[in-house]
Image (cartoon, rainbow, N blue to C red; front, side):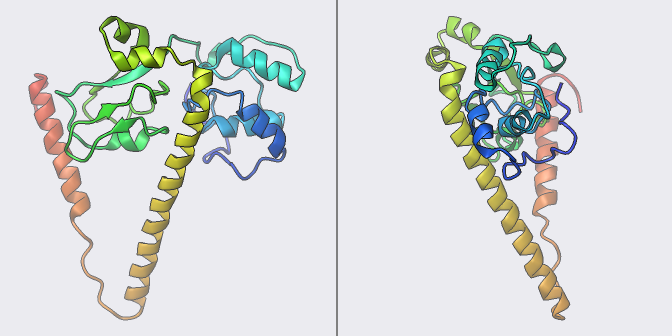
Length: 241
């Protein structure tokens, strides 16, 4: 289940009615930021639990262990994981097929914990030690070059990063994942602010009587570049034009 809860288009980080309790609850969540709970991120789910707007059993990555910790914290009954939101699975990591990657950067934007490195038109790679297995990089990939693979399977292939990642529990990863997510949000907010500032400046120039220069064609060029790369990728995979 990936549909976000009503009224939670943003994580509402500033809207916690019970900030201390929210922080305590958030500290028990795995920080995968996967949205499987029905909320935009772990903090938003913590806000909902703190304000009695959501139960404690909607986190598949955390599973029964997280439910038990939350029940102890809130002095409430331990309940089974609500499988409507998914089931707990073995830990996975995203794996990018280098031969199919077109360097579009869409997966980099989608990754909430900055676990994907790369640049435009260059092959991307996943930092296995950072990947939370959230799967949010899968939908935006235009050539389906990303697969989710169990860490145990990669260890069997001699993947050193996977071996190291498997030795760190989800709970131990959570603090670092929370920090990376905060940095990701801050960077995204800064970019949005810069875009809005440019638009305001452009609007001010037009209203001041100065002729506005034509909109740059960079966006169209990028779309055309991605389309061409997708065509080449399909051809390599025998999919035709």
